[in-house]
Image (cartoon, rainbow, N blue to C red; front, side):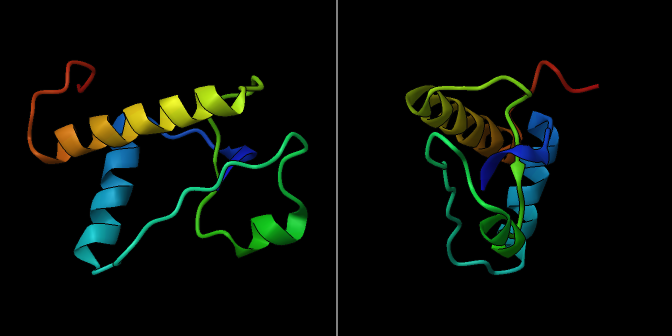
Amino acid sequence: MLDEKGRQLGSMDFARRLEGWRDAGTRECRFLIGAADGFDDADRANADLLIAFGAMTWPHMMARAMLAEQLWRACSILANHPYHREG
């Protein structure tokens, strides 16, 4: 769940999280982007992971683009492509 109260993961951490789910046999992964007022506490409590893209507010279309880019980057990292920010 993408949420302002979530953890701010680096790209390597995000990739490792996806790798862990993949290796554990997780069949699907869903990412939720909340409405203008975000999610309520009950929704947050049911999430497996809360992820924040920083303290700033992002428009939904930007959040989608940022998530897509991070998914692409995570797949690249997991495929052992060199990551320029590692180290």
